Length: 229
Length: 400
Image (cartoon, rainbow over the protein chains, first blue to last red):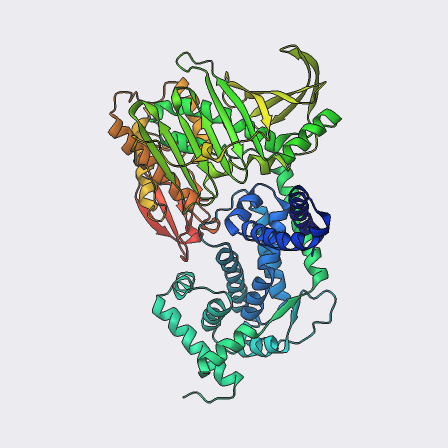
């Protein structure tokens, strides 16, 4: 756990201890009761603290703990989405890094109108899309032409550490048209509804569903060596 | 398992991990960035103001500004401005940091003849409750966790329910988190003011100047209690305010923050469904504003806080058409239009790149763009002109 997160957890622990001290007279019974109450308390505390609305509220008011929790909560999801979309970990890492930086810089103006997860995911998607477009404009290398994702996770400066399955998936993803890739990643890994994906892509719900379906079919044929008709 | 399900499962299971060292490094960078933002942040909004503005006809905006600036500037002062070297202050800061509840009295006054001093009792309770009580039994309660509020209007036995479920960053909610704001106090004051006596107590003073506001903080030398905060509003000459009677961690019963209206009170509807607000609501507000002012110009800004300050000045200069005679129904309708217009802005996502350029432009000027934004998912911008017509414009053709 990062040191900043410790502050929040230590606060919870302190409150728990205070609670225990004020409720338990017999020290011999202390530990089992402490264990039970602490678990209960931690659970309640977590559900309260991790609730996005409250987190955003605190974050906007300068709470480092809230920033820490948001980061911990969504970092890996965003990295996974970015890596899935881009098939290039360096760029994916840069994008997620930039999204968090911009999120922090715009804290005062930030307006959450939906889910925080959805918002951050959209930021990643938009940047990934821009990256793809800029490559196409430069007519250099498109995302579809990138080298297969290498499992060079041993590099100390590497943020994303891919599993073999993810590398295999990412390489398969790279063969899909970008819109299909987006639909698949956002629906399955981003947990977005087709309506949200459609809005993001500026298409109808049915088109988003079709993109997902075609993408999934092609992935299946690649991943499991099936022949599509 | 069906092949499609198998593929979905494979995608779900294909995991990545993140390097803990890099995680920590990035987090440190984010925290540094946050600190930088905090240090450079200025007072951008005094949250409840816009809501009050919306509930008043335009000639009363100034009065609303007095009340709200008074209430909220104190919160901003405490939250944003000061940390003073010195043990007395350090102890106050510590107490603020640890406060679970906080109550105080705020009193504002303005050197405007028809504007009386206003005194309100403020109570905060974690995790996000606020209660403001004014003479005459007027009470506003905000529950920021639920995103709901209640205002009680005794004269006509009415109550107003505030429902901002789709506007999680409603500025009205921002103010409530005073306790949280207090935990991020900056490091120093601008000036030490020496000692003086207040009600027989020797107090030590510190002055902090921030954008638009001078605060003088007085702390009891002996007890090290926060005694008084004096506020002077630079953007509203003649306005001043005090905060006093601070009490930390007093027991505040939950019933104080109960959102159930009293028996016998009837509902006054001002609920705004932010899902439904649109560009048209902003246009209606802009049109409405031009009917309020004598020269038919659009508002100088769409920032609710600045708009209130400008309105104060405009009231003083007699730039508004006197509409004191309008009925309550008309007032209500106008307030609703204003609310919905500004809601449209509040709801707009950050990447809409909206910009307002209506200052000084008169209604009817079809050649001047006064507002533009990029709707979600659109490649082009919507541009509103001075005659309130709207066109889709490519980014490269936007006004410079």
